[in-house]
Amino acid sequence: MQAEAAQRATQAAVSIASSLGLTVDDAAVLHNSNKLTLRLRPCDVLAQVAPAAHQCAQREVDIAQRLFEVGSPVAALEAPEVFARDDYVVTLWTYYEPLNRAIPPADYANALGRLHAGMRRVDLPTPHFTDRVSEAQTLVADRDRTPRLADTDRNFLAGTLDRLRRVVSDSGRPEQLLHGEPHPGNLLSTPVGLLFVDFETCCRGPVEFDLAHAPDEVADRYPGVDHHLLRDCRTLVLAMITTWRWDRDDQFPDGHRLGIEWLSQLRKS
Image 1 (spheres, rainbow, N blue to C red):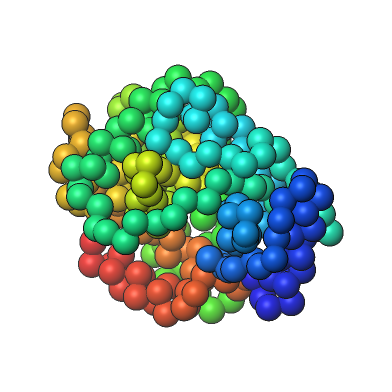
Image 2 (cartoon, rainbow, N blue to C red):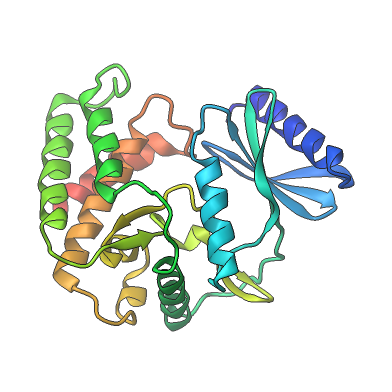
């Protein structure tokens, strides 16, 4: 978020937390991109704030609550609802003090396996992974939204997304509820163990689509992986995140440089 929007988003989070009887003297920004993540103190609650047009907050809360109930390794909600204030939606979560240590790949794989096992017990309507690919394809095709994307790169990305969408869809692998982006940034090392966060990208698909977001060493320790499919999923995911970086409204830090770098990497894959 830009500075003015971030300030209004912070005010919305503080106002909601205060209305719930939480004491908030300070709101520290932990992450700022398409949504704002804040640590509210001294109540020590984590607030996530997004524009009201952000339509998946309720789904994220519902999935996280159900997963927590079945014992999955997920962050707990401070309040199991979505709050609206001044054109923003706010969700409140338990804050966990992070442990500054490297996560062993075997522990990462075990936590992801436990998450997937819990997700097989949760039956909630969620998009298919191809819906997310379609969003990337729509963005590539929209010159107004991706004005700096050269025609040769546009055609290359469009072809890559289309080809790999079909390859992964036709793989015949079992499909289930997935996190959608279980990369290291969405895995917390806490005093109570490894916990996954950010479920707004949940979708259905083969587990290899999730594993494509994790380091190679993690997939090597996850049982029953189709490594040929995993390779295709890694390339598909790279094409998708490269596409997001060319969106004129993308607020990912240093996003344009990454878009150029990832395009080059994608051509070599």
